[in-house]
Length: 159
Image (cartoon, rainbow, N blue to C red):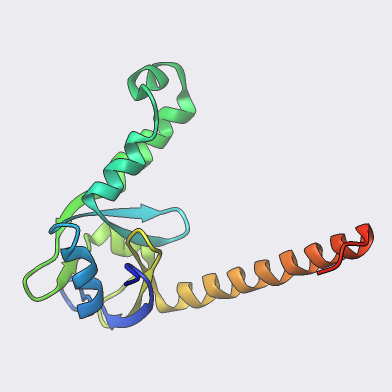
């Protein structure tokens, strides 16, 4: 069974919570109840199982040494540290997004949010930003396909 795939529309309630679909709740339940919220530079909030987030962050060898030597790495640590926080999915399947995270993602009470599967967790987007992101993805794929076809024609390769 595929995990963390699909797309759901939900609403942001007055308390800054969204209700996850039963499918998404089940995907997280298989990994444990602890999740990490992380603000993405693209303007969405990622929700990762804690073990996935920790694996992403532990991929950097000797972070203390790198932090001592690199301004860029320290800035990366700040971004992750400031824009990541542990959270739990409630018994009702809701997750509370902190006010700063909602502001970052353009999510306001009463607005539509999109819960987008990304295979390692989900991302929470405002509907407007998701539609723009989807358009950008489709345009990129179309342009990439055109370049690939042009390259094939130039080199005489056939499909």
